[in-house]
Image (cartoon, rainbow, N blue to C red):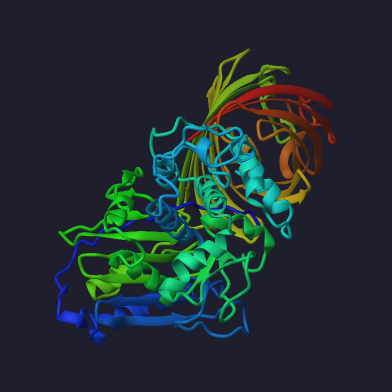
Length: 622
């Protein structure tokens, strides 16, 4: 499992069509024609979870419940069905609860929004952090502090130091100070210079609450918020006993996050369990002013800063999302796992619930209710991605599948090359890559080669399966071109910090035939490559060793014999091994030097039995 906590800003698909929007007192949207689309959308979204996560939705207006429903199971096969009262992990909605607690303490005179970190906590809690950071900056994510979950530096898997420790010990109970220790080693920005979503802010706020009250965080939550509002089915996981029914399970793809002690790292930033009804109580207690002594306290919470997404801003523990067509806005919070708690002040409506799956999107539920119809688009799958990289390098030889491919120029000539790669992930498990590779001979007779290719990759659990089409065009003193298709299967295995990736590839050349003077291999020939790649971190995620070894087998693909009378052959081609030293200069730039050796197992045309070569490559990733 690769844990990837997506601190996804709530992205509003602003409503553009509101022709069916009617207000009829307390019966707003309560008629069956408006309820049916919500129910159908809920079923569609939960079906996308593929058994990993059930959903619940509660929508309430000034006259009471307008719609509540549930779909799916609380956990795996054989578990109870979800009901509207089933508890669930609310993840980052917890931040809104923490923020309200802080605001109540400011009303009581125990804190000020402009109080500084150095004045609020002992030195051992704030060591390494800017002491001038204010409570207001912690609440609004403008402190400049890094997020221990998501900020770098990263390793080759995209994990930082905290995530590596988090993944290594599922049974570990995390204390707040331990999370902060990882944040101290990450680069910070000056406070007040813009929005940067960071759980580190809310861990510090949790410690401030405990320090100023002399009580545990969950006790303060209960006395200040849960008991006054009647939130009887809400509790802080891993810190107090379960209340009410067992919670439904939250999933990250097919990985179950329920009852795994390491999730205690959420704490003040994401550790609460609640129900859709309790979250409605919280939103209405907040909106009505019941939680505060002064109405200006909520106004202060809603003074927001931009987050970098159009029409979305963040206040003091609350997102604000502007709706189109003059419909006003909604404010609240959502959480990792697609839990949501938002209030629509212009209509006095609350939206609460969950989908219990990180790889989904709850927004179509709200949209279907507002528009009175199912979304007119295909509900997209989260995880869409787009990457682009430019790689350039130099090799002392042009070693291609065990053969010095510039054999006609004489042994020992090198090449420089550039590679442009674009990958689009249209689901979490499906990727399409377009690649364009151009090489230039650096010595001897002029030689150029252009290789465009397209690759489709599908991920099944931890196995990557790829299909590839490659067109090669060589030109210089003579021209050739060739067409090839290939298939590859690969999987990562982790042994502590070491990663090993075995793979097997099969390439089929369908012409034209080299004998006709156009191709570089015999038409209808093929090549089997068995390879093992490794990665050994040396210093954080900056420097690592990347050894590899490979064995090639020909099926009349390469040739043997005299250069004037080459003969295609079948059998072992060569054994190859090498080692690279990637150095990550920045998040976008990596430099890698490498050296390799190839032992020819068959007398290949114009290739030395013992072949050494080396090279360097620079990668720019976007």
